[in-house]
Image 1 (tube, helix red, strand yellow):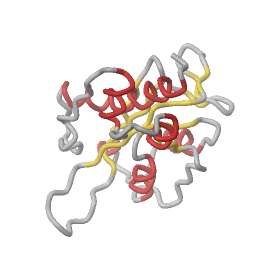
Image 2: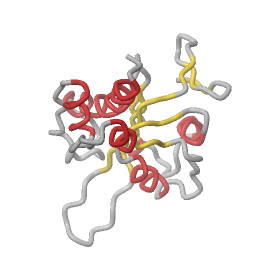
Image 3: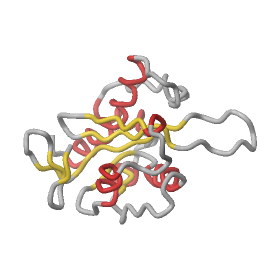
Image 4: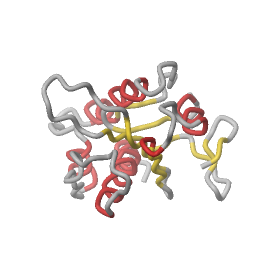
Length: 173
């Protein structure tokens, strides 16, 4: 992905104004333990998923390219639990300002389908798309030096699923 004028441009030059978004953090299992820094940011277009492995960087600060994308208000970032993701990213970059461009699709799903009972990403994928989204890697250690194929698939699917659910809710595809 390359920075475009008010939009994200893919390698082939196509412009997108919405991307799927998610983050992963090494889980904490002890009561009172401070939360860990975000280890991975996932960004998905309809044809590409990019995994930003932040824990591999020497600096705590976000890479300029990622920060520029996150702060670009003209590019909507969609997923489930985005407000928590933004708060977690601010532990890495206190001045990060996503300018309201992170959008929790569960709010839209509840408004469009009032009888919907399961608005987590797994529930939305099952209800709207008739597919099963595995959450088996959700407690994986995202600060590991290498990821297993299952971790990569999980991370990519989480970001792509948010974008797919938005399409299904809006009836676009």
